[in-house]
Amino acid sequence: MQKLLSAEEIAVQAAGEASPNRLPLPQVFADRAARLRTLASGHSMGDFLLFAAHLADAQHALLQRRLPATRPDAAHLARCRQHGMPPLDAQGAPLPDDWLDVLLALAAAVAPHAPASLQAVIADLPAYPAARLKALAHAILRADEQLTDAAELAIAPLLGATLQVLWTSQALALRAADLPAGFEDSLCPACGSHPVASIVRIGDAGHGVRYATCSLCACEWHVTRIKCVPCHNTRGIAYQHLEGEGGALHPAVRAETCPECHASLKIVSMEKDPMVDPFADDLATLALDMLVDDTGFERAGRNLFLFTP
Ligand SMILES: [Zn+2]
Ligand SMILES: [Zn+2]
Image (cartoon, rainbow, N blue to C red):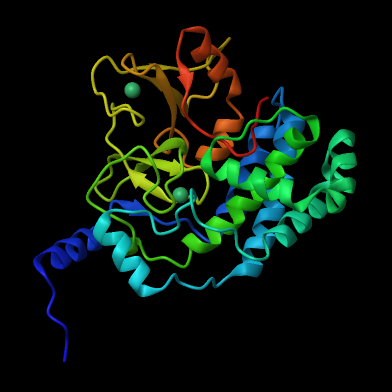
């Protein structure tokens, strides 16, 4: 006999069916690597973007080895959906048992393409205290890493890439209906992390629909256009873009600025370029962050390949 659902359960199920959330595709890292290679061509930071492409290649190979991932247990998913909690919580969740193996495999795969200074750090990585690496991984997941030493700064993007593989594989075991729906928030409904940027996709009706893209698990959640994602303000929203000699430099990327909280989040547009990737296009437009910073706004997007002291 089927269990009767409470009114609340019915509402949650109905919201889940028309989910405003998008799960990542299994080829997310391969697509990102291809986009990074396109963007690297003729770019002043071409070497950096090519290295990021190699890192994304390694992420793709490691992700495929983890699929299909195990679904979280049904009671946990139901509880999270009911209380609007992210089921793959990045803040408090333990790391999967094999996290260090993934980090070492990823580092070994990118070592031949890494700059000399990073190659030296990678060679020493197996001897690096695992407890310090673990503490750093948790700090990155909580977005409160404080990087002062050179080795940690060099390792952080490798750890960031590792954490993306671990969380994206878990996200691929979810269904869109597993995610809390019916709300619009500044953090990812799957894992609670910050967005890297936002993307305007072409919706079924042919008009643009905006989503924020998670910096960790690559899930996307619907956000309103012309609205600040960090603080939800809709007044005085403005846009900046990079200007070259012959017009807009990266026409598919704009920075949305908010006069209330002084945050700026990028919007990449599939209407302008169907091949955009929020993560890759963010890395290729760091000059736009400088422009935005010069005009008094602070970058709100979090990119796990970019860490500063
Ligand atoms: Zn997420
Ligand atoms: Zn704001």
